View (cartoon, rainbow over the protein chains, first blue to last red):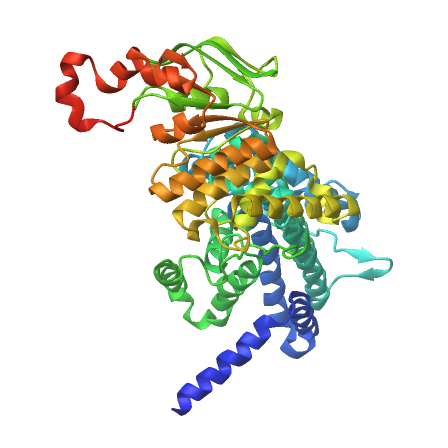
Length: 332
Length: 269
């Protein structure tokens, strides 16, 4: 009896939260996240920042996989392009020191160029074939990085990468980067949610649902595929730049195929095509292993189990994407 | 009346199979043209040739006097040809309204910048599009369903939604591939009336593939009959009904008729 009442109250409270206007939910969550660092200490701030980078990657790949339905297993390549572009042009390696804030758009552009270059040859492929080619592309980039010693120092990595600065202020502590990454996440979420609810987002989703029907409704399939690849890649480019600046040094191992796998898993767990899903997925996939450090041996086991359970009980993800309602209903 | 679509001796082969052989078809403005023929006669292949899904090996397809063979699918849609599918092909996980909005894609122009900045031009365009969608949903009788996912609609409504989506393209020619398939007599009757309304109220031309002879003969201005990829007859419904070649294609030659009578598709051919 008591249990029932409690459960009912709890669910009513929960629904009250869900019924709040979208922007209020957003402001509350953002505010909560923004005041966290002083309370949780350096280590957890660092973990949350890491989760934040994965949110950015997740939001980006969500455009390619979630919206446009193109299974891209080589997403890490664009992350690497962003990180190494920044490292080349803002470290003692070549003695070039271009400011971080100029490199952000430049790295986004370079990564999306990479996305378009990958996109062109694979435009006519679907499903599994596309997945295999993109997987290969991701590996090619990693192997290039590993072996182009003159350029990348190979496995020794690139060191002493410039941190971001604003005037005389330099980003050094985990808390500084925490806010930088929070800003990056908010911007990425803003961009993709606007795209999602637009003519372009609808074209992507229609393409995912039925490519031939979409083409016959007037959607230029090749153009929208390329666009999805390029835009999706640009988020990884920015994520990579921030990662390189935060770490101060990058190594080929940071860009293994596991990054792509993690990013795909997190959007599947969160709910394909859903932006809140990306956040939840990143927290679960990147955050929980940190909590369970002690049981690190069983990490991959738990991971596999989680995916299997998800597929059985919630195949649409924790936060399935909801299609937007029409604003203009009763009006004439 | 002006000529809208002119198909001249179109031939399409699939390997050794001659799916269409020198097919001709003429559609004038504001005309309902019926396309009939036994299963496998090449009706849907002709639709696919018109909409750019297949490129015919020979012949020409002129839309408003311009060659459309060789154009891409979305380009053909953009010049004003929209279609529905024999087996419904909606976007199942999009809402009813969004399905129609996708049909309106060609009429809109917002790019990446417009979508992200949501500037006034984009907002106006979006508002106009949503109005158009509501209008179309009312026209096909789906008002109040805008936020339903397409996959959750009943079968008959899905057919109507497909037509609404095609109309959102803003076509001059609408291709309907068996719109009454799987419908009961009442639904068929109301859909038949609805097809005439599309022509009368929106001023479109319609090319209709249909197996139900009452529907075809009832609303078509002209009927074209295909059999084994060859046009065997063309004319007003009354002549087609009496044409011995058509009767033969559907029923077989007199000597065979007794044997085949049990399998007649529709008695009143």
